[in-house]
Amino acid sequence: MRYRRMVMEAESPEEFGYERIRCNLAESSLSDAVLDALGIDLAGLVLLYGDHSGLPGLREVVAAQAGGVGPDDVLITAGSAMALFIVATALLEPGDHLVVARPNYATNIETPRAIRCETSYLDLTFEERYAVDPARIEALMTPRTRLISLTCPHNPTGTMMNEATFQRVVELAEERGAVLLVDETYREMTYARPLPLAASLSRGAISVASLSKAYGMPGIRVGWLICRDPSLRETFLAAKEQIMLTGSVVDETIASQVLARRDRWLPTLRRKMNDGLGITRAWMAAQPDLEWVEPAGGVVCFPRVRSDVSVDLDRFYRILLDDLATFVGPGHWFEQSRRHMRIGFGWPTLERLEEGLANISRALE
Image (cartoon, rainbow, N blue to C red; front, side, top):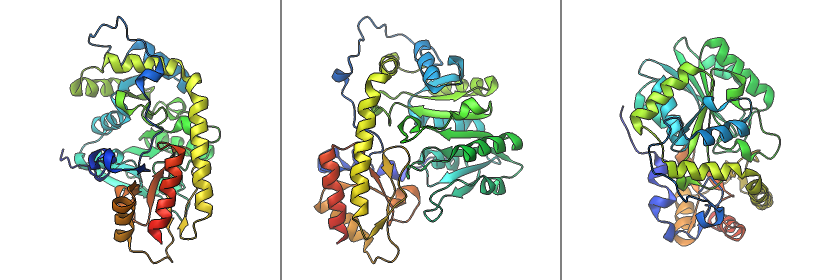
């Protein structure tokens, strides 16, 4: 494998320096949780090697809340990024073929590149409202297609497949003997009824998620992959054991207690999501130079400067960051035109969100 840094990580707010940012609209999660506010009890916790698949209690609660799967179908990982890495490196090698949606979360694209497998990109476009077309996926597939990789809700746009499309993609993967990977990090963060868990629909489907985005807890590094195929699960467990053997019992204990109390957190989290989307929607309605596809899930959107608007993009981003201390995710993070920008409306306070959006308007003047 040949590694290179992901652009969005090399240019991330934490690398740039949080202290230099006043309005951070680049984050793709809800606000970071504070441990003291969670009521976590770690008294008496023995710092031993944990269960290689993850603490049994954590796997039980993940399975119960996901629906349609059992605890043995769950493998706990160090964040969803590790789950995605495990799936790609366990299933793909040079000569194998992958169909992956683009734009996408960077790991879903960069890890297969490091493997140097053959890749066809399912390019999702603004003009088609970032819709996934199963017929286009089928046209991109070859006899060597090993994996189809999608996100739903989609990062960076927040768009979603409808249930009929989702079901057809699952069927297509089964028909062609390919594994379907669905990054479902935002599944609990939809504005309508969530889609069924991909892994519940097919033994050849893999669902990936974490506590990072929906719960604002990237610091404990807990994610998971769910798969009902015992052979695939054994392969993924072998990969995890070679990477880290077992996860942190501290992190997994915190995660277990958080998820066990999920019903306490969700109303507050959903209110924050809806408030942020409402502010962003009202702001977009007043922007003659911008257009978007309104998100159906998650706490990010991907507006763009209209094609008929003349703008010096270097100047825009320079003013926005250097003069107005406002950080967004530029389109090149996702291999798209820099006319696009990912805006996260769940992480900042509502006051900072409003200020940051106003600063985008100012930088475009």
